Image (cartoon, rainbow, N blue to C red):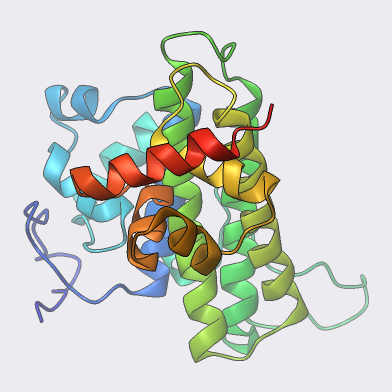
Length: 262
């Protein structure tokens, strides 16, 4: 497992670098990805402007690497964030707005320090901020027959799934708080609504159409897999926009057509 070096010495990660996902890194990366999409800034443009190469950006946005300080400063400028926002997001002391994540307390009470805050609550607040940002991006989507509609929906869904993974991991390894559960629920609700919206487009992906058909038929993953004659992993992969073998894809397409009762 590759280790993360100190900030002053860490180079931009190579595209194939793999390290264990740090929740703080994933939180910061997901927020940056959401902000980049909100501002309609492409990965290619950031590379062309010498901000960060595409491989390192992808690795950062997926929570697998941490850009060096100079690169973070350039990113913050492009994303219209105040200096140090990305580091504060990783630490859980800033949201993507970037407003402090410290809880509101009565005027005469003692404000808790960041160290006193529960990691699950910090992750929940960062996830909420990113979901809010992505919600604004969803609101600006073009009509479903526009050529950019499906690519943009698919990209937003990828960001939402990353947020879901961060919140879900926090729920598995830490103290499960009501706030964290609400955040996880909000992410999944957004995924559900956006996938159903995406399935309405003429260019909807197989995964989006499969998800909508399965939901409309009230089928579980296991029931859908049995009905299609494929492994459950194939259904999960299709709905997550992961590669599916041609034979499995054909069987899934056939099932979707049978379940299309509109």
